[in-house]
Amino acid sequence: MNLTIWIDVAIGLSVIFLGTSLFVTIINEYVAQALDLRGKALRTALVRLIDDDTMVTALSRSPALRPFFDSKAKTGTLPSYVEPQILARLLIGGLRASATDSDPLESVTASIRTLPDSSLRSQLLALTATAGSSMDELIKVTSNWADQSLTVLGESYKRNLRAISFFIGLGVAVAFNIDTLFLTEHLYRNKESRDATVALALKITEKTDKEVFDACLTLPLEKRKADPRCAELLRLVDHIKEQSESGGKLPIGWKDSSFKCSSIPGWLLTALALSLGAPFWFDLLNKIVNVRHGIAKPETRKETDKTDT
Image (cartoon, rainbow, N blue to C red; front, side, top):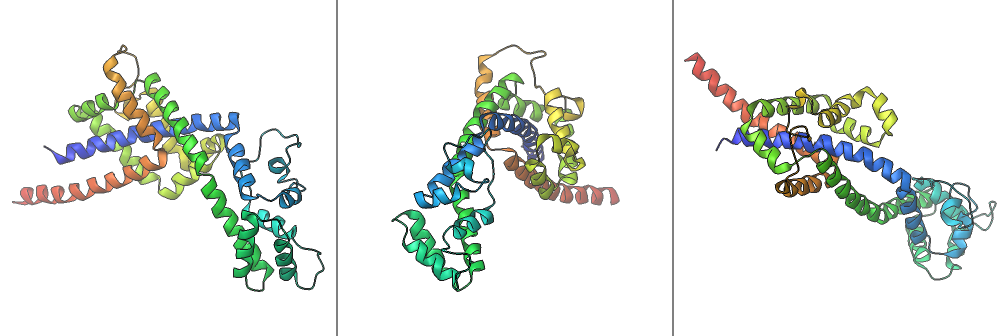
């Protein structure tokens, strides 16, 4: 068994899954935006975090937070992000008895003690105990707490998005006839396709580092298209959609194929792979490419030694 061939097959599959995952990400963005999934998840997290009616009333006076806490407020799409420091300032500011009190930290602490028993009250009391004697430090620790709490509470959104990604990925796998089992066999037997996908992988990993990749994923679709740093990733998506020759002439699509029940397991494997997300496949692709470089170097030196003799 030739280890290098199997490494190249793994690289080819990773490239395919990366490009297709990026395509699924684009569809996910449209679905999440249309259904306002991120905004609704953030509202649920904020309501769970601020479980005190007095503070809910105080925060709902802020235009930035009113859509989340005021059920009567007429809003369209909910904001998808709340700056933790702003939330902390509004939260602590709402607890001050007066803007001119001589000891603002003591004033805030006294106000917290008067709140009804709740998870928020217990947490704020714990935060005041770690803030020393500085209001700025209290706002800082409250901001960190809000950020971490919203991140944890937002995990349900990520789980829902992964489930949506699986079904979208299954739809994409069927629509483009991306059969993981058949692709694996094809890449193993077809050196031309294998070499083309490896060349494409090397080009992507050389021109796109982790920082650029993460930045491209956070950009809205239109800005992503306009950003030259994201060009290689967008070309990869096009390779998958158009089954271009530079992508390895892969057996993707329905041009010369008809429906076969034997393709169902391969489609399901593709959907499972795509549900892992583009960041997973980008990181894995870089690791496998590094392994390939490590194997290729000794082989190159060995061939050079033979030539010299």
